Image (tube, rainbow, N blue to C red; front, top):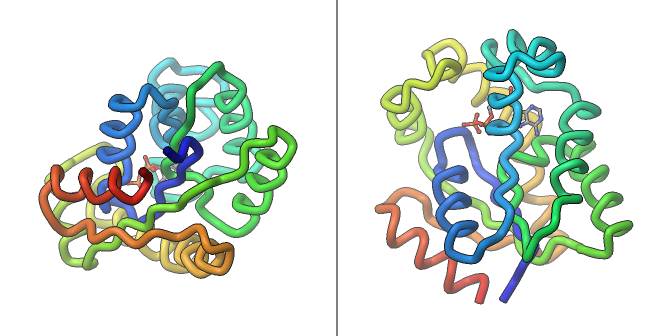
Length: 182
Ligand code: ADP
């Protein structure tokens, strides 16, 4: 079974939900950069103060900051890990690749959760997180298309990409993912 996984997809595609479920089942680390950043904001740390307004505008935090967070968390003892929300652009993908080569833990599979845009917007508006208002959603989708979507091709070229239809019920999607990582 694969142990080093990555979830790719637009905001609202269900990466966080599926990654949480899968990490619980397999006792893997779930590494969501969004969650980790929100925790820093909640705890009002120096890092949290730095990123709060960026996140609430729907923009990307600096590559350097997220890389530090990812590295720190990948160093924790684990049976496997799932990256969710990282990388979000090509520069982050290249940094990640370097880090993983050094750790001798290369990525084994990238799940691309595909879903129509109108479904995404509906889901995000229902979710109603602090950065889930209509303006922020527009910004996040724009940034996703420009910066993150090219990673689909990037991982396809590395023969790591697995396509998942994410417009369905939670359980069906989860089973599809587990079958593909077996
Ligand atoms: P979503 O994918 O639904 O937008 P996330 O929880 O993954 O939610 O991310 C929330 C916010 O955290 C992003 O809009 C961004 O501001 C910040 N963030 C998360 N991951 C990264 C990353 N890899 N690089 C830069 N900023 C990030």
